[in-house]
Image 1 (cartoon, helix red, strand yellow):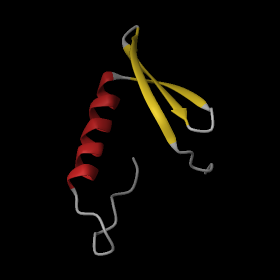
Image 2 (cartoon, one colour):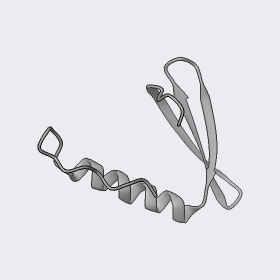
Image 3 (tube, one colour):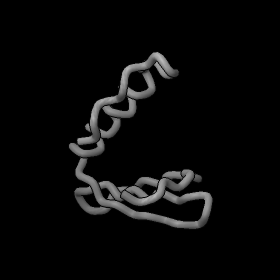
Image 4 (tube, rainbow, N blue to C red):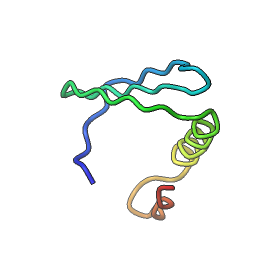
Amino acid sequence: MTTAHRLARILATHSGEDIELAFATQDGLTVKVLATPDQIDRLVDELEDILNSPSGPEAPEPPAAA
């Protein structure tokens, strides 16, 4: 696993039938990925679950990444 980088911004655009995501980090790295609409839908669901779950030392561990 690589070292985590602090996110600066995310850009998203259509690329044919897919969605292109560009993740720009504070240290100047940009990573682009292509995802299907179904993958984006699942990502949104996972992010909503994380945002709506309790945080703090008593919070249960998040589910393993798919």
